[in-house]
Length: 381
Image (cartoon, rainbow, N blue to C red; front, side, top):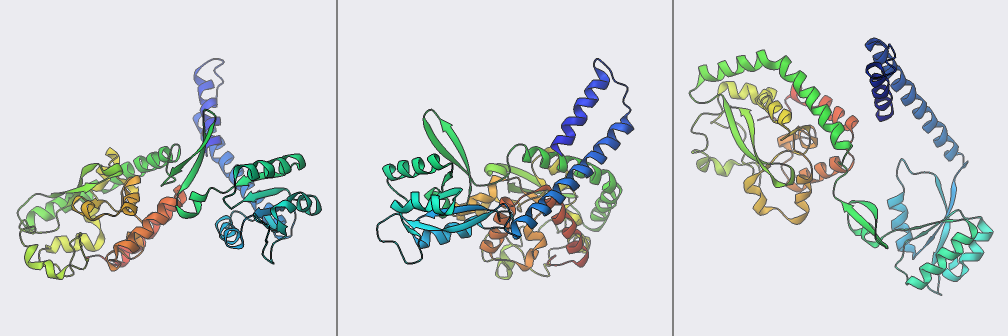
């Protein structure tokens, strides 16, 4: 998408600036569409061919690890996933002179192992002294083998690492989330385009909802809820009012019915909800005003659910990861059970998985699944 966009942008500029090539808009649109389909199809077919080659052992890189059996096993589990199948692990070497029976030998046997097995990669998984690391690098570089080091922090911290060179020092910057520029820009463009189109489509429906709310009970049409967004910033999240005006005053007498162990207040068959409000909650149309929050940039179409300000005092350090991305109208919790899932750690696990595996395709899948959840009314009350 980036390549096609850049190419079309250059061609579009050439139609305005010298030499002013006469290219019609329809041609540029057709070229962009056809080019994207052709490029995406070609890459998909090439990926499939390469994977088939790997399955048959063609093109696999012979790899040796340095570390204890436990360290090597943990590293293999971290390295192995659906996208990383291009390595053939010859075996491992232990950093001491007493190798376990499954090892190819001790660290001093590295030159022999590299020569005998024609090893192309060496991965250091253990914490070893600097002089031993220097010796390993010399052995690898003399034979043209690539050398990798797995930092000890990666095995204990669930995050993404980015190598940086500062002066003469190599650093690892740890990221709690994948969403950075240009991924954030792509997500923002997607949010603006889709929310703007949705607002245009739902304006008549929103007008009728506002009229129904005013006719049934006194009070404002919209309800303003204080929520916590990206980086802990407080913002006003807008919803259609689905309760009577005295709902907050009656919360104390109904506290024993709360389905959540703490923080969020939600009960089944809430007597404070109006008849119009029940329909709005059942169809999730009370969330439509949040499209304005999306346009402003306070929310996204898809993301972790907005946090309550009062809940922050109960947050533990690992809970704050959900504040590293913009909250969404819908998200993994909404399509994964909604109010049927009340354990906060379970909800947090869903959101962490979303943050770390984010893509526009994942957002689109969640939006499609949201439609199904809304139609079935799962967990809506």
